[in-house]
Amino acid sequence: MPKSVLKIHASNTDKIGNELLYEHIVYLAKEKGIAGVTVYRGIMGYGLSSKAVTSTKFWELTEKLPVMIEIIDEADKLEEFFKLIEPELIRMPKGCLVTIEPVTVLLHKPGSKAQY
Image (cartoon, rainbow, N blue to C red; front, top):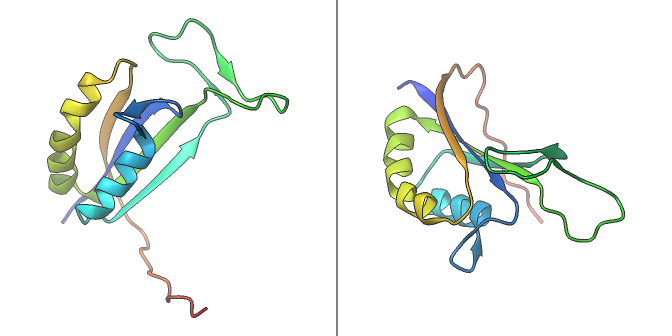
């Protein structure tokens, strides 16, 4: 089956209810059996409704920074997952950007479980 990547661009402060958006997405994807998710925190950025460019500064304790949630699996599973989260994203007061694109997987090697 062809693989795709679903990317959600948002802010690290965005929430779904009382839960951070990126945490909500990661745990929901795991629950739904999605192959993999990674959350990247940006160091600088702005979006369509931003009034200013946000950036990380070492002296700031609380920062509003861009995040990208990257989700990879079969295209049909990602489209189904997006349909599940789309209403929540639409209801969020803040903006976001969601894209999907095909990817070519060159290597997908699972690791062995660590014994602690």
